[in-house]
Every structure is written in C-alpha cells, then in structure tokens.
Length: 205
Image 1: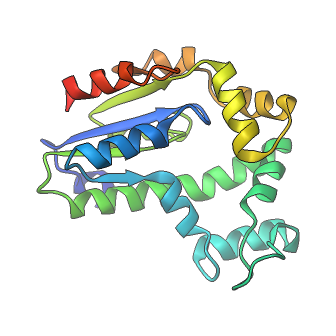
Image 2 (image 1 turned 90 degrees about the horizontal axis):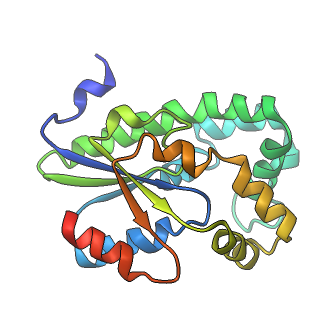
C-alpha cells in the first residue's frame, strides 16, 4: 500500500519551512506553548534515523567511513553531524547520496507519526527542506518563514561559531526564499518584530 494512503484526507497538515536560522524553532515553540496542536519535526526524525546501530547509521558509516564518527562522544560511536554537514556541503555527490537515503525514510516516519494523530484536526510539520525533499504532497498548506539574510547570518555566527563567509555559504546553499515563495500559501514575517508572525498565527490557528 502507498504510504500516502495512511494520511487522513480531511486533516489540516501545515508544513512549516524556511531557510537555515530563519526562526522556525522560535515559531514552533510559540505554537507548542499557546496552541494545543501536535508538532512533528523532520530534524528530530533525521537525528533518530542516524543513531548508532540503526539502518541509516550503518549505511552512512559504510559510505563515509570512520572520519564522521564523533570521538568526543561519551556513549556509542555517534555520527558527528557537523563533520557530516561539512562533507555534504563540499561534495555534491555525497549530498545527493545521503538525501536519497534519508529523505524517503524521514517522509515515511513522518507519515507514520501523522497517522498516530489521526483524530487531531490540525498538525504542524516542521520540514526545513520541504521543497528540496519534495514533501509538498503530505502537507495541505505550506507556511514559509521569511527572515532577512543579515539576521540569518548573525544567528548562524552566534549559534554555530562560524565565520561570516561560512554563514553566507550555508544560507545560499539552500533553495532561495524567492523560489520557495512561489509554492507557499502563507508567509510568516520574522525579523526583529515578532508581533508580525504572532499576529498572523493568531488569525490562522
């Protein structure tokens, strides 16, 4: 059976997406605090899918080797996500390989989780690479977070302890806001004034 058939057709599934460091977590935390709505996070599933001894972990380790292992880990031989991200950033074939492996697994997991909330009228699906991974078909509407590149850059420098050049490279590595906007239903303005997106969400949820 097609996994998409597990989705409830009359359920409202909001796909929340946006560029790196655009403020998706802040918006998600607000919805979690003020609305009684289940939130499913693709990044959370991605981390679970590469935990030691999982199928994804074994496949990735076979492909990349021990250079991606986090030697500072106190537990099992965990994958260092920062090292893996840097490799993918520099090598397009590695990026294509890991996306081909993980995106279908994340999508299947997200659909399975949606089915657990079949009695909920609305669910929020936080999917950073919603368009790149082609997750549009599991959403009934798409909300795109708009954030000035200067703010994204400053957040990345502070959060990831990287240079300005590296921050801009990470931002430009993803599909542009202009391209994403073409396929989005709602734009959440996230600059220094949070009231803009808060007021939008209050009207929509």
